[in-house]
Structures are given as structure tokens and as C-alpha cells.
Amino acid sequence: MAKKEKFYTVWKGSRPGIYTSWKDCKAAITNYKGAQYKSFPTFEAAKKAYSGNYDDYKGKKITSAALSKEQISKIGKPNYNSISVDAASSGNPGIMEYRGVDTKTKKELFKQGPFKQGTNNIGEFLALVHGLAYLKQQNSDRIIYTDSKTAMSWVRKKSCNSKLPETPENKVVFDLVRRAITWLEKNTYTTTIVKWETKAWGEIPADFGRK
Image (tube, rainbow, N blue to C red; front, side):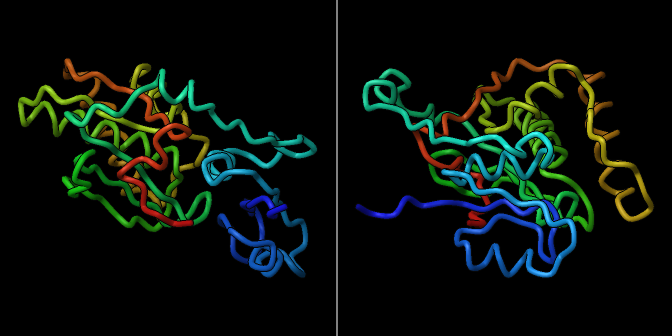
């Protein structure tokens, strides 16, 4: 029987991040006092956990939730009259960047960063608002895909509920956050925001591919 693939999230260690092998994960936590890490069955689960807190996953058994062919069939295919947005953060907080691409061709439409300090959630939020502004400016009827429920919630609430404190190092990121919130407060849009079905379609086209 083939060995099941695992992904390892390291919240605290000499090199925080997501690893695809125990060897690399071990190297990132060895001799680090108070290291925080956990294994996950999928990259998506590891990525989601990395955006959160170790305490939310400590002691919990994480199992894979693969979709059946019938479930995938019901979901259907992505709507290619769309753009997709995503963010990446090397550390939490860490160096962060985000972008938007054409869903079908993966042609990059906009990109911001890398910024010295940010979080994946902040990046996903900024990417989504940037995408909304981009589509409005283009007078486009395309929809927008994101794989972040957190970003969708923040956009609905017109707020960024990050726990990251503002510092001189990340001021540029918080300036963008304030700009994004102001845009949401002053603008209306007809663009439909849709959750990307990662389990059925794979990684979102705007993904940075850091696996």
C-alpha cells in the first residue's frame, strides 16, 4: 500500500512555513524551543491552518475529506468568464504578496508585493478588493473566485479583522487595508464573489504554487 502523502505546517520554528516532507519539517523545528507544528492530509488544509493559530489545531485529529465523483459532478466546472485571486505569505506574519489572474489562461492581471510583513488572510482580503475594483474599472461582467472564506466575510462586513498589530514595518500593508476598506464603503459593485472549489478543481489558478 502506498504511503499517504502528508503536509506539515510549522507555525513556530527556525523556518515557519508549509513542508511536504517530515525531513524538512523536522529540520525547521529541531532545537527550537516551543516549536509549533502539525501534519495535514492536504496542502489546502495545511495552508488554511497556517493562516490560523496552532491552538485551534493542537490535539485534534485532521482527516482528509475527499469528494466523490458524484459530488464533483454536481459541482460542475469553473465559470471561465471570471478572474481568480489569491495571496501567499512566507510566515505568519511574514513576507506577503497577492495577485489576480484570468481563470482560464492564468494570465496575471495585477500583482502587489512582496511586502515585508503581512498575513495570508490580509493578502486574500486585499486581493479580493483589488479584484472587485479592477473589474468595476473594466466595466466587466466577469465573476471573481477566491479560496478564502475569511476574505469573503471581511469584504461583506467591509472590515479587516486581523489580529496583526500595526508597526512601522507593516505600515504600507495597513495603508492598503485602509484604502481597501474606504473603497468598499464608497463604492457599489455588481460582481459576484464565488468560493473556489479546491477539492473539485484543484488549486485556484492564482495560487503561487508554494508547495
